[in-house]
Length: 355
Image (tube, rainbow, N blue to C red; front, side):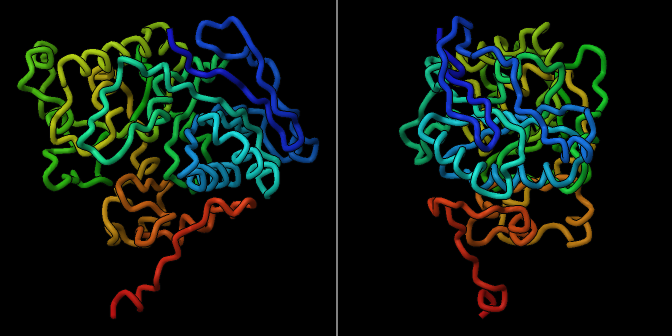
């Protein structure tokens, strides 16, 4: 059996790095310690503790930093960040968090072991993009946050502009293990990715020519959802064994190629669509205003962007890159890397690009 995590680092700015062996079947050191909140922050912040899970790969570390900074500064709740990363990124991440204005964040760093994905993910040699193991961290939430009853997962290409407590308090219907933002909601305008089928419904993600998919009797025109931001009821997740269900469909896809050949989105989406078919609640669409990274142009008005509770640069144009829309909004939350390893690709001004 593979391991999800082989180490847990309990971190305040000055805590030592620790790597402890344990007998937990998923390789997780039991979590019974969180750095105490300084008294001055206790006076300012509510007692409500909110678990936020975010993946942090080395080449996108600046994104995770900006996301956490925006969440922290827009809430008075006691947020604990569960930062999932790979072993070679741990030291860089710790330095960034401990030597900047982020040193008061409460966080745990979890080292994700890619071996857990063996036999579950098919690597396509024809695709230039290598496998990104951390995109699957969201499948293992109960193992990453074992003592929480509820958690929020966010991608690293977001910034939050409102109190994360509101998202955390999203009501989930009885029997639902998660709440997502549907792709047919009013903010996404049914965006279709050229050459990629209908990326706002199930047929854009799953191959309906395959008998295994047809037997599920899922309507092909069912609205899909975006898994980059969601709220999870971890008690229900464990009761329904959601992680095992997701792994089952990952394994079946390796054997039968069940995902759409025109899939343009993340390969994490299809198994989630199957497992949560008509079995998920909805979050306020303003908590996942997305497609900011689908093109370099500005698809939303400045007024709408300002009103959004969470902005999501899903797509190829990231805000730390050269041509992303509303990158200046993202940059407001970016904290420069003290090691100098991560640097923004400075964008030319619009006036310059217009020439």
